[in-house]
Length: 249
Ligand SMILES: NC(=O)c1ccc[n+]([C@@H]2O[C@H](COP(=O)([O-])OP(=O)(O)OC[C@H]3O[C@@H](n4cnc5c(N)ncnc54)[C@H](OP(=O)(O)O)[C@@H]3O)[C@@H](O)[C@H]2O)c1
Image (cartoon, rainbow, N blue to C red; front, top):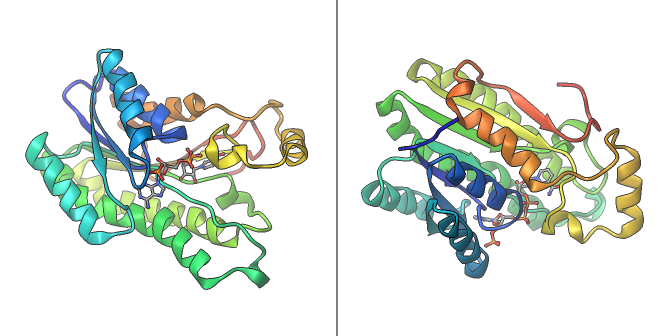
């Protein structure tokens, strides 16, 4: 599964799942854009790991929810390296709380980053993909978009929304050979989940047939498949990477 000659952009590529995706795509030969918003150190570490392994990558700082910043960043990448062939809309945040007490701002922040960010980034790269008649857009949704979760109405709505966005985009872009798919991780060991209290983590494990939380590399493997030429004939789909905790579609 080679990605030699392809330019990839991974939003939120500096840490967690995004970092594993960057490493994996770079190991397949892609030139990988590592996006982050606020922590340059993590992005620099990811870049160093890729370069030490002989891969090619670059850092691109922008807020996925800021339309002007997204457009400017994609323009700069296109001028410096070429148009983006593979976009992984991975940047995501949580602002958890029961709905009765959720602040409007917690709703807006989560929807803006997780859902609008994917819309803005996809819009910024799609013209180049359509021109080349080849492109891959992969949206990072979540098992929570399928199961729901008390305390996460904002996150669940954003992640379910990504599935709808993916299906409509897949239909719009299919004629130009641009595929659009989702990966839906279950509980994965990253900064996002490390704050969960031990007893909650134990309760979560009981709901996972494979018995453990997943690793970022488990998710990166699914992204790698969707980005590759082995996946020419799949679009509008969701790959679930969750240890069996949700088996529907
Ligand atoms: N971990 C899980 O169990 C799990 C399960 C299902 C789905 N997911 C989804 O997988 C994705 C990655 O999760 P993770 O656990 O790897 O998260 P993480 O460790 O918290 O990393 C989040 C990444 O997103 C970046 N980011 C946040 N807001 C951004 C913005 N406005 N613009 C650009 N970048 C932004 C962060 O950059 P900075 O460091 O600069 O802030 C960081 O690189 C998310 O979409 C998440 O919802 C995770």
